Length: 261
Image (cartoon, rainbow, N blue to C red; front, side):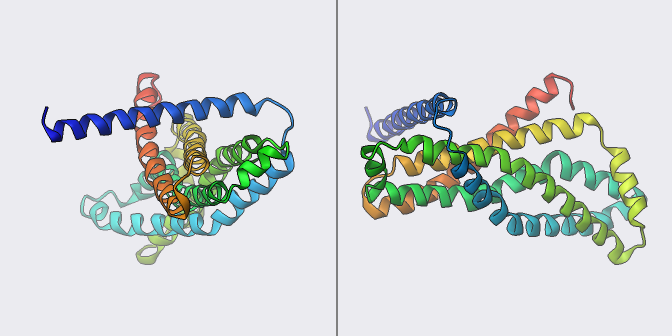
């Protein structure tokens, strides 16, 4: 067997092995979720750390996204004589796809790397082992609280980002045009339906869970000293970002089968 084939087989085996361990880590989260004690105070702390501290970056990204999307779209729409449809098109694009995905990617970059680095540094300095010896359940305290916070806060951040994006789109239209906010909002709302909003909102929960579980897994299983902390933070972002696109693709297929598109 050639060396290249051996390397490919080895990498594939390693990938499948790590996928299995990560899946077991996720199942362990669900088992620990319903067991006492419930770390409610730590959960609220993580909601603040995960949600409030991420809001400025996600909000700024959403505002620029809505503004730039509108300004880029306007010349083409004017060329075809359908400039009046800009609010509807921008609203559908932001609510259904761009808003949730971009918010999740920014969330993965900020929170995924933070969780991976934090838990990784605790792992290599043996703080997690010390918690285990002292009688505290480190998985419950560190992992469950963070994953739940990510799962619940990303949908909230995504909704806020969508609203800010639409406000940016409104400003983008009025840079070279003149549209009232009431007319703009009426056009956006009338173009949307329940089938547009529900799948987009539901998948943000899945995105949040993916970011949280990947960041916690990479940090909780970190090894090889302080160099491993950097690798765990980097791989948390990369893996979570790839998962977001895969989950988005699967959700689109499922919603299409169920008739939500």
